[in-house]
Image 1: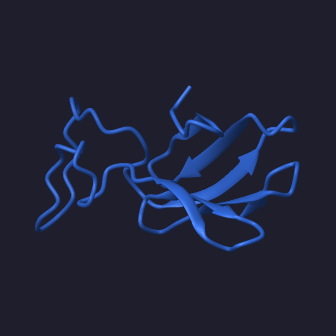
Image 2: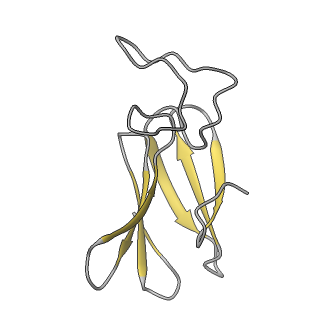
Length: 98
């Protein structure tokens, strides 16, 4: 997990390929980047019986578990690292890959 520099949000890495953002006061989930998951309607990858990534899949995000997240010092970006051997950088407000 990582706390935003202003202390208002918490970013969490997850085994389910998701990055989740939480309100630090209410402890409610604010949003999530779903990545290449079955519940992401943008994902065109094959999921059953085994995951098979589609190279032209329009879904953004990781295709394996997310192991680390961190905020930039100014709180405008979040970096995530995954077992899919990638590091991605996200706009911390829009949660879009930059």
